[in-house]
Amino acid sequence: MLKNELENRLQERLKDEIDDPKKASSLAAKLIEAVTDRLVLLVAPELDYIGFEVRSLQEYSAARALISGPDADIIPRLEALAQHPSWRNTWLLAAAGVFALHPHLRSDLVNALRTVDALDRTTMTLLPGAQLALSLLDEDLARQHPRHQNLLVQHAAELITQSAASPITVANVLVQAASRHDQANAHLERAAKNAVSSRGVRLMNGFQILARWAKTPGQLGSASQQLLEAAVRRMNPEERAAARLFSVEKPWVRIPGLAAYRPVRIGHKSLADFIDLDRKSPEASRFITYFRRQDVYQLDIDGFTVHYVEPNNPFDVPLLEHDDAVRQVEQAIVNAIEAQQETGWHVAVILTGLLEQVLPREAPQPRVLGII
Image (cartoon, rainbow, N blue to C red; front, side, top):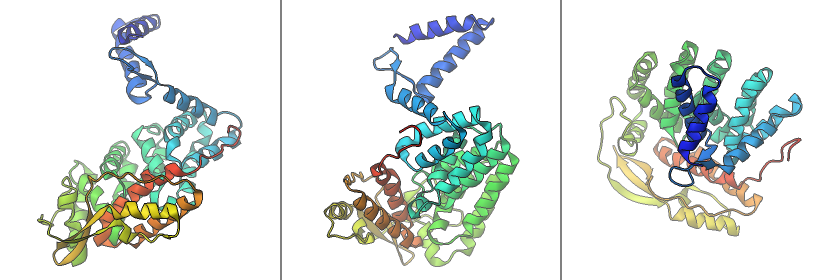
């Protein structure tokens, strides 16, 4: 169907329901935007044409199925799917359905995200529940429900000290949530204080978020600026050297009191040097070969060796066919992340991104009670 034809049909249909033609046209445009840019139920297979996006329709249908049937089955289904990235879009659609159609289950849904983050060491590292909480905030799903909004803010704020692959997204979504509720703003101020009280990798991760907040107007921005300045004054020399890496790796991050520097490479390793894997396993050996191709540069900063991974290198990770190999590689990466000190914070960020974006896709698809 031609896009103009769809717009005209929609406008004519709305004019039957709305007396004001201008309002009908405006609403038609908003609906077109919603189904093409947000829900992505309609796409443009050819220029100026509109068609159905089958994948999105499948996700929408699956989401409706997830929240159908007995109430006692709904939250367990969503909890089972929450840690699987391939189900993310379906999960978010189902969560919206819970908020709209099952208001008595809202609290159970929010609490289930906490449960997911405590399942094992991998979920405690990746915090998939907190990431979904952040996505729900980004969708503004709970804005009209302050109690649940604040609970989501509290949970998503745990990402501040995590080695997030997209710290800018975390910072922006949380600061937007803080602007909508005073209590949410207070939660984030407390989370910011906890972040700068951390040490090692967690402190470096917190700096990425607070430096972004320090640029924003309002109470949270002022508090973040003051906390950053105080944290820099308390830093030991090794932490200060590690934080100066931001002036190269994160050019949008300007830490008050830390001068920029010109990096001096004094050597290099590979990611394989940070991963302890059983080389007897053929699949694990392929991963070792892959990790060996990823350079980790050693930089001399203030007399300390700080590790840095070139962010533009493509990560074409080999597929894993067996569950045992998935678990082995997964645990080896988690061990490596946990072993990093402040001077290895960038290695921790890269490894977290690999764990988050690649390994979970190899997980077996869950069987959902009453559906699959």
